Length: 198
Image (cartoon, rainbow, N blue to C red; front, side, top):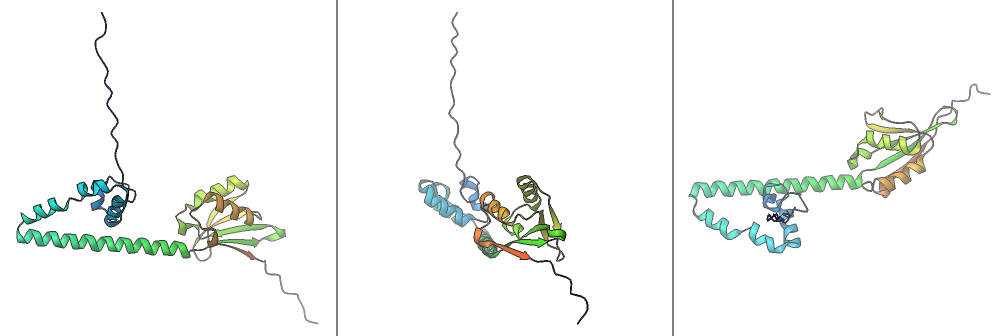
C-alpha cells in the first residue's frame, strides 16, 4: 500500500516593523513617536498609509459619537499631540547633550614614573562603564576599574601609559563616541618646593 498523505507547506508570515519605534505599524499611533512613525511609513511603505491611517473610517466613527464623547476624543487627541511634542523635544535635548559631551583621557603621573589614564565622560554616550573597564583590561592586559572621583563622578582608571592606545580603541570599538569629542590631557605631578632660602 502506498502512502496517500501529502504534506503541504504553509508559507511563513512576514511581519513589517516600524523603523522608528520597532513596533508593527498598527501600534505606532500609541507611541510617543507617532508623528515620526507616520512619516517613516509614508516614505518607506506609502501603500500601507491609507490602510493603517484610514481617516474616512475615523471620521465616520466620530460622527456617530455624542457631543460629549467628541469633545473627550478631541481633548485626548490634543493631549497625545502635546505628549508627542514633549518627547520630541526631550530627544532633541538629549541629542544636543550628546553632541556637546566631552570624553577626557587624563594621563596622571604616579610615584616612580608610573602612570595611569583616567577616562571620564563615557556615560553620556550610554556606555556601561564597568563593561568598558573590563574591555580595557582585556585588550591591554592591565588593571582597569571604575572608581568615584573627588567630585563624585564615575571614572575609569587604567594602569599604564596607554592614552594613545585607549584613544584608538575607543575610535574602533565605540562608534557612538565621536572622535572629535575626545580630549587628551596630561597632569604632571606637583614637585615639592625646594627647602630653605639663600
